[in-house]
Structures are given as C-alpha cells and as structure tokens.
Amino acid sequence: MAANDLILQKGLPANLDIERYLLGAILVDPSAFLNIASLIQATDFSVQSHQLLFTRMVELSEGNQHIDRVTLANELMRHGELESVGGLSYLISLDDGMPKLYDLERYAGIVREHSLRRRLVLSSQALIDRAISGQESADEILASAESDLLALGESHVANKLLHTRDILGRAEGGINAFLDPTKRIRGTSTGFLKLDEMTGGFRPGELIILAARPAMGKTALALNIAQYVAMNPANPRAVAIFSLEMSNESLLQRMVCAQSRVSQTKFREGFLDGEERRRLQKGLVEIVKAPIFINDSSTIGIMEIHAELRRLKSQADLGLVVVDYLQLMTSKGKVENRNQEVSALSRGLKLLSKELQCPFLVLSQLSRASETRVGDHRPVLSDLRESGSIEQDADMVAFVFREEYYKRFDASLHGLAELILAKQRNGPTGIVKMSFLHEYTKFENRLDDIPGGDGPPN
Image 1 (cartoon, rainbow, N blue to C red):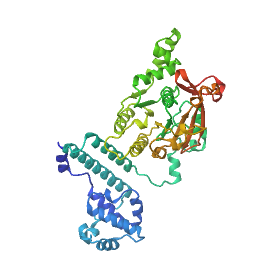
Image 2: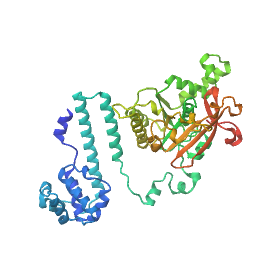
Image 3: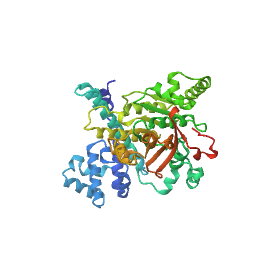
Image 4: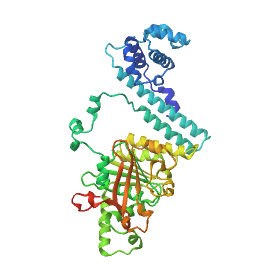
C-alpha cells in the first residue's frame, strides 16, 4: 500500500481522548501543569485547538496567573481564539469521561509518543516528495535526512531534574559501588595502565578525540587500544573501526605485526626468519579470533555509521568505536563552510555515542600551529583543526606527542612518547608517558608503570 494511501486510510498517529483528558486534568488540578509542561510542549498535540489551549496555559503559568476555565477563556478571548478552539462549551467538556484515577505522566508519555510518530511520518513523506520531484541531488536529500533523524532522536530523550536518591538508584553497581571505589564499575580499559588510572577507562556515551600531527602515531595508538579491548582476556568486547584513510588490508597488517612483535619493514619485504613467521602465524590467529570489525569506505557518513553500528550492536557486545579520521569525513549535501561541516560531524558522532551507549575514539588532525611554535611543540586545544566545536563536543581530548620527531639527533628521546590529556570532563588532565616501538609501530606501557616490570599487558 502506498504511503499516501495508508495515511489517508489510518490518519496520522494521535489519541484525541488522551489529549483532551490531559488538558482537562490541568483545569481540574492546575498544580499538575508544571510537571506536565516539563514532559511535553504545545507542538506535541495533534490538533491546532489543543495546541492553542496548551500555549495559553503556558502563558498563564509564566505570568504567575492561576489556570482555570475562566482565566483560560479570558486569555483565549484576548487573542481572538475562543471560538477557534470550540468555544466555552468545549472548555467545560474537557474533563467529560475522564477516569477518576488518572496518570498524567503516562498520558503525557502517550502524547509525546504519538507526536514523535507523526514527525517521523511527515519527515518520511517530505523525503519521498523531494526524492520524486528531482529538484535536489540524492546526496543533498540524504544529508537532510541524517540531520533530521538525529535531531528527532535527541528531542525524544526526555531529561528532567532528578532527586539525589533517584540518581543514586541509577548508579552503576548500586550504593556499594558508589561509596567504594574498589567496587565501582569502570569504563572500557585501554590496556595502558596510567591512562586507565587517570580516566577510569573509556565510558559509554563518551566522545574521545585523539589528535596529533601526521606521523606522530595516532592511528597506531588507536589500533593498539582497539586490539586490547577486543582481546582483553578478562572481558573481550567487539570493536568497530571505520578507516577513511587506510585500507582494511593495511590495518590488518599493522595489527598482526604489532601483535606478533614483527618489524613491518621486514614483513613488507619478506625477509623473515622461521621464528618471526611462527609469531606472525600465531598473531594472525589471535587477531582473527578477536571481535574486530573494519570498514574502509572513504566516503562513509554519519547515517551509514549509525546503520552499521546498530546492526553490530544487535549481534555483539560493542565496547569501542574508532573513526580514523574526522577531517576526512564529509556530510552529504551543501554546507556553508568547512568549519560548519566539521561541527555537524563532531556533533553527530557525539549523539551516536550517547544513543548507542558506547565510547567513540575519533581521530583528528591538528593545525600546523604546534610546529611553528618556538621551543615547546606540544599541542594545545586551540590547535584542533577546522572547528572549535570539536573541543566543545568531546568528553576527552588527548594529543599524541613524540619529541624525537623534532629532535631527531637526540638519542635520549628515542622511543619516548607522551599522551597529553588536555581535556577531560570527569577527571584530571595531565601527561601519560608511553614507550613507542618504531619497528612494530606500537605503543606500550613504560616498564616503570607495570607492577613487577614484567612487560606490557597490551
């Protein structure tokens, strides 16, 4: 059945009786208005008369006036709207047939649910009309669909003030975990001990920006973390990697060499001894067994990432999403400038992390400002390239920095690396020192950070 025919036959989703009961209940008990107003708005009602009634109730409340039939009728008359809502007789009839025991929050929830369904129907119908008219490109229509659906999803989440006891009741692990740090549920471990100590791991819904200048090793570090998450013997979880720069074969090669501790140069050239081949074979088996999923499409957008992740999350325990890297993404359709486009992309990724309740590790380029600074080349937040909104959307911003890159003849700096935590909403900032193994393109914990100094866990 065609979409238009179905709409004509069934009508747009609505429940006029529930809307009428809700408005009538407010007139019976005006003290309930503020609670209802925190859950819905005038546009959630399906007919214009109900929208007008609720709008005038809002104005009365904001003017510190009592809400009843007399004040509401007077407000409607003042705007010349009394007859358009059905007159005084309709105001009097609003609570007709209303149950003696009513649940206003549930009624408001039903009104919001139908409102969201109507918006989905109308948005879908608008997309159909635009696609058929042929006046815009498919990419422009897709871009509009992305932003509209994400906005609908965000508007559907009803956040409100919570009492402290309710917040405690929702705390992961309950009251014992809240009071005892040793029992507190932590985020996804990265395998880097000092980083986990400073962050508590990567938490669901967080957007983590990992930025660096080219050749600093941001992709390598992201892959090292991804491998640990997927291969953590205590709690292996699925990892999705979206690579807009490197092919999936190149990423797999990097991961296998890092896992096997075999030189990438020797691997590419084929000069391997028997022991290295044995380690490569063992490492490849371990990687293949791990729940690591890679998409190397260079043109993937927010909507495609959303669809892929929803499908993966329904099949596996999704522990981490890696996007490499932000500045290579493009939004479909027209945008005023590149900064606006990157802002929309970073906001879209943040919304996805919240919806899917999974940490997103998103790689980003830095401007050349850090290289032109005299003396200390360590990056700062203002070096984030093309958009200040990246910093605003991110829960955490970390920079990969290797001073040996700038002081190539200083042997004392060889293999030393820093992860600079420049921003963290829920924890301290500072520097995590790491070791960088050039031949394997791999970051590891420093021996000083490992209990017993026996070697890295990742």
